[in-house]
Length: 149
Image (cartoon, rainbow, N blue to C red; front, side, top):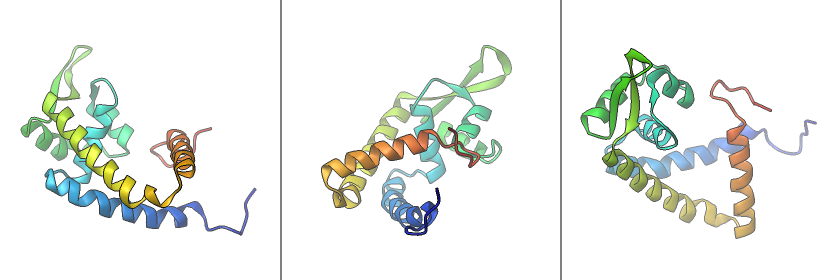
């Protein structure tokens, strides 16, 4: 079903992703968060406490890569590590109330910038369609780069 009348998806998305990163960076810097820290807060905001391995898999990171990020977030009171009742050696990660507040504030600022500087380029109906399609494609994609049907 390939066609040559459009660029490939990665070529179309790359400039948009660069724009989105440029929009996010000042917000994250103002809140003293790295992109990885925000990714961790975002993932933890969407569910129950989970272990470091499960979190790393969910966000597509090596679990040893995020140790320093987790340590920093814990030191700043944004996440907590509690013993896993099913495995005394493991720790479960969860947002603290301050972590939830910080994530909500950053998320709202980022979405406001996206609305004003990116999505405002689309009429309302196209914006809703774009966001719905993007959500479906995102949910059907895996962290290892393989599409899920």
